[in-house]
Amino acid sequence: MSDEYFNHDGEGSSFFSLILLAVFLLGGFVVARVYEPGQAIGADAAKARLAKREKIEAASASKLAGIEEAITEIAGLSKDESSEKLIERSIAKDGKYEAPKNLTDPALIAKGKVLFMTKTCFTCHSVDPSMPAPAGMALKAPQFIGDFWGKEREVHIGYQGPIKKVLMNEEYFIESVINPMAKVVKGALAPMVLAPGLVNNEEVLALMAYVKSHSK
Image (cartoon, rainbow, N blue to C red; front, side, top):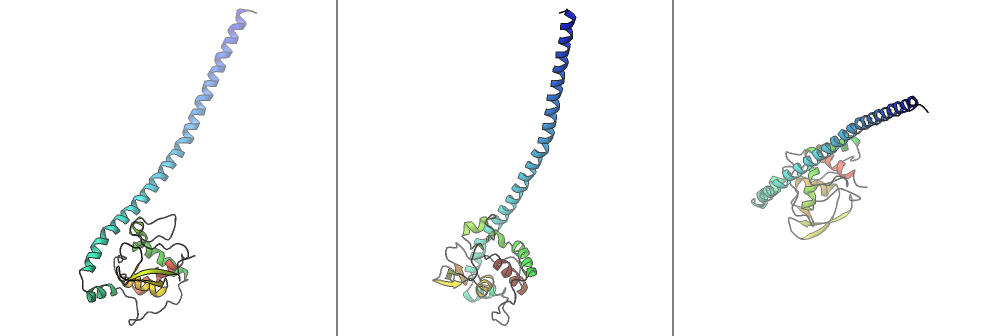
């Protein structure tokens, strides 16, 4: 064969090599463009999870910081003074407990859910196994998960007082809110810290409806 034939063959090989190089470069560019958004989305999701965790931990730290102060304040009061201070939150009518009419009302439950967050109940009491309450875990506070409503539980009569079995029902729930020192769940390291601000009748009923709705 002539030298001209081989020269043309060499040119074809070079041209083919250039095409392959272009294909590889284009493929690398496409992969990079696809990977970058995915990487960005993953980073955003990680940041969101971190921000959520930091928010929960900050709320928990705030709750824990107030516990010692609250216990010290109550301990420094006389029996009558402490009772008066705690019962300021009472939702009882004429000093008597009245069972709510309908705790299954969706609107009441929805309101209770909002209050459960705004009153910082969620920092100590979990209603979802996938969302633990760090402060509550540290204090061994009751968790509202599983089949708990209407069930017996052991409590101290008064802080670190004698132990008694009681039912987790409407009357117990309301007493726990208006007078958390009256009965303290066995094993808890401290009585419940009162929610910031007064809780009126409707708000306590809404909280009770929301908590009860999680008993399965």
